[in-house]
Length: 200
Image (cartoon, rainbow, N blue to C red):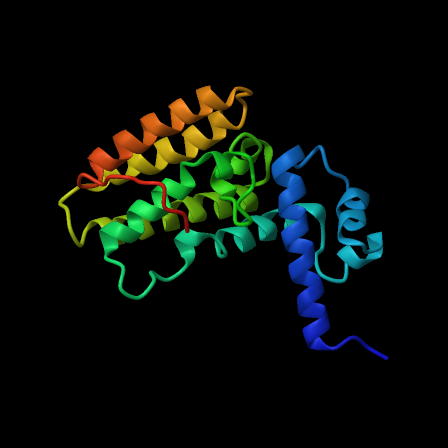
């Protein structure tokens, strides 16, 4: 009996989710197809029922995760754009995010050190994801402050770079100091955003 469309969709989603987690931990070259499928509880052949290659899976896992981050979600009812942006930045620039404890870790930060060795299609997907991040933050910020394009670019580059660097550090105190510095500077550039201990 053939699998239903719903079953195929769930399987594909599981592959994308689990694969992103492994790629984020070990990089493209550090993960084999057998590793990926074993982690999903599937056979090697299952990959080719959904993707033509490991490279295609990597690209689609990047896009899948980008579409499922908090930044891609709609703003909660009742929250101002400034409040929502404050919460997004606070959670992005958090120890939990750096440690990969957020289920929806940002592919821009988690794949930053791996992306330059990938093919053109993967680099394009990464660049598109970065532009979408800029667009989202620009959209929220433009409603209450007059920050310009250079401000947005510097903030997003700083956010991604800060998390990528923080993931290489071993001391939590050093990580927290780095994150706090980035939150402070990002907040200044985005119209005086302040941060508290709220979580998304």
